[in-house]
Image (cartoon, rainbow, N blue to C red; front, side):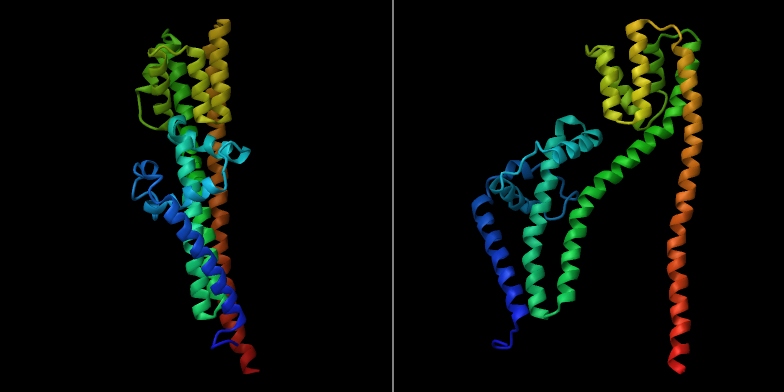
Length: 291
């Protein structure tokens, strides 16, 4: 014991001091450097975005690469949500946010741990940091999953409408445009974008490939591949192929709904089981206490 402070408190204070000095160094070195990067960030999108230069500074010091396999995978996810133009920038912001949260909150956590001399409080604060970091990735995956679900939900209807219009004698391009403007939703937005790209000079084959890449769903990829083959080989059976795909997609949609219902049911079992366990504890403990 040294002046009322034990060894564990001294260690926590030392760690907190090291992180604080590191934070101050980065703050002094980089507080004016990344203003143009931080300015476009929406204030309600990220917590503490005004000090993200801390994270960017650490990234520069560590020579953090955006060309690693993991980085490319995450940038591709963001591109699907926000478009290729700003995907790398947004990923850079997320990594900067993570480093900022870590280097800013860690010293606070260790100082609190030292002041309270409570290792459990320190662990809870460290877990809170980990949850905050995890949430940034979870938010992207959740938004991506929701987007893909929306696209798949509209896909059978889109195929049915396309087949119907092609049967009336409309060209694929005209039928596509009519379906794209018939409703709202993520899939319809992507279809409208494809029509705009073709109108602006992009070839149909390139437009369909980019459409499949943006949607990034195997069913859409198969659909786009079928349309590309139709353009390249002049397949006259395109209407029948789309009808077959429509039938398959409706069956798949029904199956997906069934699976989701089963998953929702199984998720309900967890809180019910926890409640039953709590009730059993409340009953059993008094019985054993009275023996």
